[in-house]
Image (cartoon, rainbow, N blue to C red; front, side, top):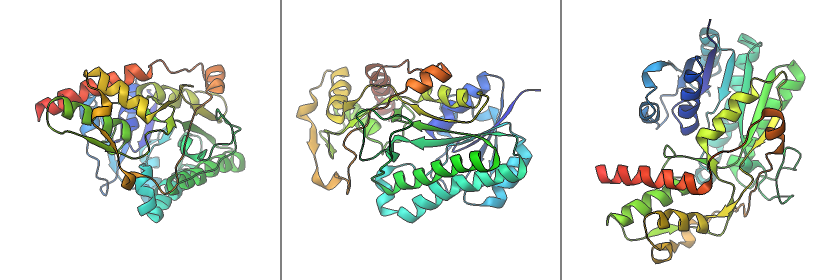
Length: 323
């Protein structure tokens, strides 16, 4: 009998890549489809797996539907990827972000504890929990200092995952994932905003790209690499927490340069810093220390920033040319 997995947030970037990974490993893959979501099935369709996953109508905010889906899927592995995941939006919708990103995770933990406590649970934590960094490179022991409602909500979900592991003996793990991108990234995220704009400027569809603080530093990796780490966590004997990162950081400015150079353009001729796009509280720098994931999971990132941005620019060129 093949293994069964349940993914919330299956229509997002990570959900799509994780679905493909698990299907390739012979899993039966189930997903939760929240009808209030603005996401569609295009990512699953893009990866050619939309007909291979079974979707349940439900919502992470509705405990009764989560219990029903956990029972019906009989999943041995449960991956919680559902969230209001755009940091910028979290300041204008802090209560929604807290409810979906924070309490939603606890709804799923409780559903598993009630209906299927033998399952293994993955929580999508985030480097945004580190916020105002206390160490140059952030590891599992670095103190947290979130700087956005999103980071605060994720921190609550993170600690509740640990609490369920320690209180009820659940096999529950958190992946503290640093920024991870792909051609399936939403257009509101800065990497896709940059690669899409580079393609449009190259093809004469627009002239400038307006951004906020382009001197912040991030540790960017490829989502297709990062979902491997999620799966590996649930193959361990014990639940635990792991930083998942490349161990290299770059500024948004540097990322712009790489993207525009891919198309033979000078980013300085087109990128405009717009003060209106600055965030109320900024996370100036993030750099992950993935030593634990490398030692215990045997995982390390295999895609460089240059390869990632090239992949995204090429995909956006094809998209814009088709429009």
